[in-house]
Image 1 (cartoon, rainbow, N blue to C red):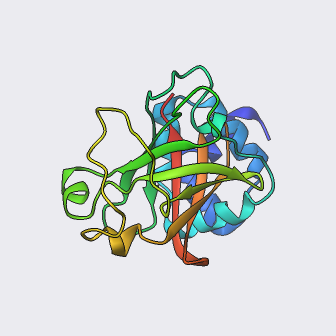
Image 2: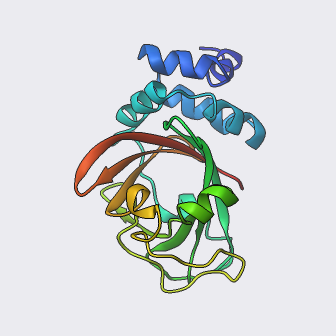
Length: 204
């Protein structure tokens, strides 16, 4: 496929239609997303419906390895945030960001929280987590809380407090690689997969 056609296949609404149909090549989508600007990538991933996200998650299984360095590049100093803007498959509050940082240069985990706007963060909570590598994926683990945070981040709150107990408690997200900047995730609650997906685009 010519490069121009590949790039079009990863643009809105073409990417959503391709994924929903099941007729797509993940390697071509990766190449197209890598060739785009951040704004183009973000526009493309935020065009994705829940069905498209589900298809992408299944297609990404075991294809590429996702590492902590893919989420927070080694060039980023410890305790400096790297936002991953995204979209989830929920009916409301679909746009959000998972914000990661590396606690130290040699850390084997990342710290982070969900940046979802003042309303959600006030009534639900920031949804703090610890992220680590596992089997070629990155697990975003809400059952563990970071032992620290950047000063600019919101106050840490238990994921069993407020409405967080319905959103983040007992949750682990599995993240799979799509492209150099894009990953796809699915929620797992108490060891059972949930019909909730989300797609992320690293901001740098």
